[in-house]
Amino acid sequence: MSEAGTVAYGTARGRGLLAAVVLGGAIAFLDSTVVNVALPSIGADLDASFAQLQWVVTGYTLTLAAFILIGGSLGDRVGRRRVYVWGIAGFAVTSLLCALAPTADVLVAARLLQGVAGALLTPGSLAVIQASFRPADRGRAIGTWAGIGAIAPALGPPLGGFLAEIDWRLVFLINLPVAALALVLTARYVPESKDPDAARGLDWPGAVLGVLALGALTVALVGGGGGEGGDVLAGLVPAAAVLAVVTGAGFVWWQRRASDPMVPPSLWANRTFTIANLLTLAVYAALSGLFFFLVLQLQTSLGYRPVVAGLAALPASVLLLLFSSRAGDLATRTGPRFLLLTGPLVAAAGVALLAFVSPGDSYLLHVLPGVLLFGAGLSLLVAPLTTTVLAAAPDRLTGTASGVNNAVSRAGGLLAVAALPTLAGLGAQDYADPVALTEGYRLSMLVCAGLLVAGGLSALALPRRLADCAPPAERTSAEPAGA
Image (cartoon, rainbow, N blue to C red; front, side, top):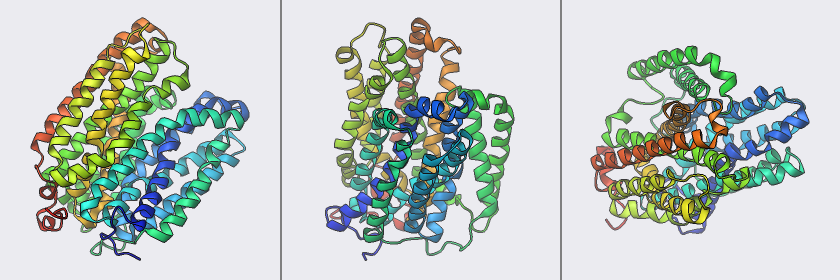
């Protein structure tokens, strides 16, 4: 078995390792969108209420967001491969529970458990890449992971529609063979790694406060946004917001005084880590806002069928799949700053073009150019951004850093979906009115473009070379091969 940190990208072991983490990450990414299309079939078969169907989606989001910091920290403490395996196995078991659910309430409970498994799986896949590949190959490996991760959610709506027409339970059963293959590949190709200096036990006060803070924040944002689960959670928003603030402050206070904190404050002492996470917040808020509003605009104002509207942005994901690994490799060799400045600005130009999509416009002339420009910008920035975040953390804390970055990206997405409709002045009935929706859509998209510009400009404060992103004690080992 190869030692951690020595696996080369182009070797058989490197390809096997990458396939293991890509497959595991793909089922978590795919499940975030594939279930939505199956909701009508689920409702008809299980005689589910609208509120129960909302919880089928929101329950997964809630526990995934709430436990993702624990997933990242646990990998550093007990072994990143071990926790990743737990996540894959748990995801397979809970997928089977979802498929066998006899009632809507049982399905919701299984989805809540599936989110916990996803919280072990998602940061674990990135932590395994960072800890296993040679420093010179990490950017390229992360780029490949990001590219496939972008395709998986895009394929969710058509795949979910196809499977739901046969039997909605196949939407969950399809995870089982993929998870089994990921487990076999992980056992064969993924080396174990962990923080040798970590405490044996988990920081339980920090874990509880972190779960409460992230869970309450998710409830507040989803309830305030009026999306899936929003109607159910709307009455809990004030209490959830207060709880999020109180427990979030308590989490920060405890991390500063705990002897073995779950998220060491020293992570944030590295300016690069902080700036890269702020850039993540802006980029993923814009990304979520774009996809949320573009799909609505295409359906309500341009008359697209739901599945066709879901596929409209697929060219952006294809560009990310094709070029993300090259961008990650380029960031490793030449430094991330130029890419993290240029990528958001190119993506912002694409969003600005899409902001003016109106009733009667054609896809080829008015939608596709903006989608392609946005996809080009994403291809430049996604892998270098993740590479920079992980490079800015000590190698022993890659799982924790990945968990933090995942939590930040999901918070950005939830915040955008929650805040943008209100900011744009869209009422509950405006989503079905092409005139009202187009006006709110345009303002929301321009805000998303502004977020991308602000994020890109923040990259000017990042180091020019990737080696300079690392903590001072690890900068020598961060140099790419041949530097």
